[in-house]
Image 1 (tube, rainbow, N blue to C red):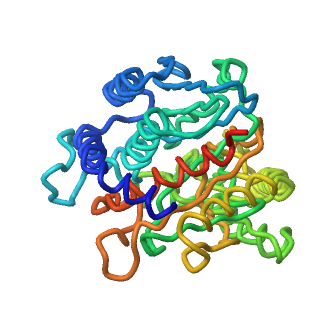
Image 2 (cartoon, one colour):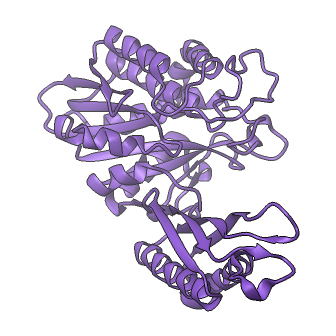
Length: 393
């Protein structure tokens, strides 16, 4: 039966691969996904879905109700691209300079559209299916915008699921993980203010460059001495800006810091220790520090029951030899985490290719492209998951 489902979707995949490549050729950045959203809405409406547009800015939700089942399911795909110049040389490469689908959101959208078509025309289920096409995953917090716009009030879900392609995993495989699966992300801009002066007379200054350098080194102790060695944390100082001349001590220096954690308590501890170290380091050099702390995405935590269900679907579809039951966590971040804070669910990975295959190129790379073989496979997974969750009596 599963081979039949996949074969059916493979026979129809040319249309949706075409949609995927059309979206790839016309990428749109966060909250600018007007063309993509219009395409999604037009398709869903043609297939009989009740469609709402503009949720969270440019988000689209398609609802399909069948039978008298009481269960409500949510499936989410992201739609936005990245500010990267494409270097693939593909015939369907981006026609917009400086913008490309370097993370596969074009493929995620196509997979869910292919599943939407099959479920509308041939799906066997009873209940309510909510298909969520989200804007602005790439740092824009589109999930939060949709939630604040009433996503789960208007479209209640007992569970919500999402999928991301992953280069480095062979195409045809799925990887799932219960618990913390992707890291939180926070950012800080630190301005250290001192007293500038002549480089030949440092005793008459309070040098913010030296304070900044000492701060960078002191921050390295947070992970090694404050965080449990069995926990994950990353503290990265990605930029330092100070001064313009070799004989002038500037009045200020700026640090840009990125932080990651796979545990909510570790995330809180990072903030506490980093703020304390920065203030103390600046004071020790006669300077003052101003910290602009910006919370990013939360830790993405997959709930046990829903992850077990998602595993069963993958095992039924492709067999045990192609399913990783408890894959490693990722230090990247994902705003689907905010949906999982509101509704139980799970976020899983589908292999994009490994080794020397074209699909092995990592995401956020100018040479990346989504593996079109996943359009049918990902759609088959969503169809099976929906039919099993909203099973007929």
